[in-house]
Length: 369
Image (cartoon, rainbow, N blue to C red):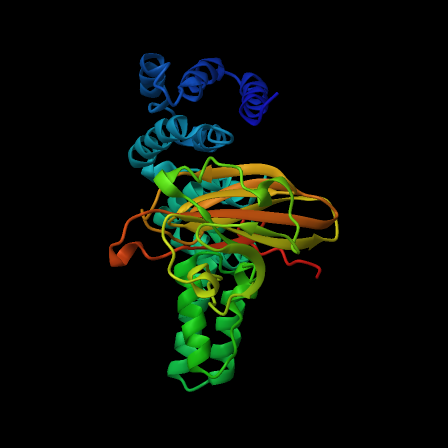
């Protein structure tokens, strides 16, 4: 049984246990059953009209229906919740909403929405629980306490209390998971003479073995299976595109973990490069490999292909792609294939990627070695 089914079964049981809730169960089922392809839209539209007429006291139930819902169904639910909030603004169940925010069994998105509602209608209640969210498993809920710590640090600095400002900024950085807040806090700490290790904070892998250039003529290299995909042998040498391809060590000095193939191999075009890194996990555990890359790329973990994108120079950003994976206890080998195409414009010279290992909240997982 998948998460959505389990959630709905639990929700159905709870609602049927309450008088007069059977109809709401049916309408919520219609909303949650809508698919990304649009199947069930008509039924969802009818269900939405009924759900949008829910009472204020039903808001926690509507929020709970977001648990495990697909993005389209979640949008339907958000819209209905917004209508109920506006109509029932004077009688919202504030205590129940507060309890919902603090219940980590619910989805981060639903809890963040509940917090937003609480903030709009009971600001003091929301402010009171904000410090409790600094280590929350939902990254979006961490933004609130981090923002307050930034404000506290700025206020302390305005009073020339550097020690208090640094303490607030450091606590904020520890809890921050969003790039904009991390950048802001790193800047503030450095302005106060503090050392900030962003690669460690993010969990970027900085030390790699890299090999190139294999051919990507006519962009066929993305699908072609070159030797590193069959076996990683760091002592091996291969006939490459116009030159010998061999493994070399590469350590990034970029604090956002950029692995730039142009540095060890030159400004090549129509080529394929590989990068391999070893990650030691003290235990078997779930994780996410997050990559940012503007080239064609593929990622393998312990020989298993996780994902790939055959496109070029569309831009790159932190955590552009999130690849759920399972680390095994001990050594794990991560292999990245990075393809460069034939374009010659100045903005196409980049042949690079950044990769980090973290949990689902974006909290870095450090290699034991």
